Amino acid sequence: MATLKDIAKLANVSVATVSNVLNGKGRVSEAKRKEILEIAKKLNYTPNFHARAMALKKRLITIGLIVPDITNPFFAKLTRGVEKVCGEDVFVILIDSFRDLSREEKLIRKARFLGVDGLIIGNSRVDDDLVREVSTYLPVVVFDKEYEYENVISIVLDNYYGAYLATKHLLENGCNNVIHLGGTPELYVSIERKKGYSAAMIEKNLKPMVFETGYNEDQGYEMMKRILASKIKVDGVFCMNDLVALGALKAIREERLMIPQDIQIVGFDDDKELCEVVSPSLSSIHQPVEEMGETAARLLIELIQGKVKIRRYVFSPHLVIRESSSRRLTRK
Image (cartoon, rainbow, N blue to C red):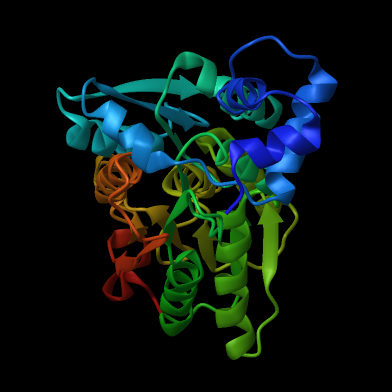
């Protein structure tokens, strides 16, 4: 196993300098900082979290939580789950990147300067090399993407299966022209949901129709309006999330089409505050977001304390059927 001394020798600096760079302290040129981090990466250096854990017993633990959009119900629930576990002995610093990937990666790099003992990254858009770099000096939990790095734990929902379930449900209800209002291609969950949707369509010898839409209600509304205006045949819609589905519902109603009689629709996340209030109520793929947040916090704390061996935790989704895709309400 590589040590600080090994890195210092190759970088031609002191052990103290290496330690400072890996912990985001001290003054060193940017070129030398990058050189030290690159050497640590090549040597597959792993910090001694056990020693750090012993020191942590004497003080509060601080966790950094970075999310792309705290106004999104998914990330609000995720945050609530994290804070449920933390209690009085663990302090949470919440950082919102406003869905700006460049800002998000800068914030991740700066997290160590906030004095955090571990980091939870709320989505999978960040560069793999950045996750690897950060894990050399901080324990990390990442949502919805799997890593093999020593100090990284992945919290994963089976997004492929969830998308497959939603699409299969629409097809079994008699839909033959099911479209997918998807996310953007840089997000791992978007890719997996697209794959699950496509698999269900191909299984029935139907052509997948994927429209890169986004993640909020306005984007769902605008995309659905364009699709309906284009005269593309649609009798079923599987949406990236519940917010996109709400926008699609609004656009469909404006065209005086009936849901589910003319077009059936299924969302993803199963946010009850949204799904059960809207009319007709929205069918959705349920994921236990709050429980996922609780698990992330618990495992990160254990990783910080040197107690955990697990590297991946997988949650399974299920379909919640409501009025927007209810078979008894359709004409088919």
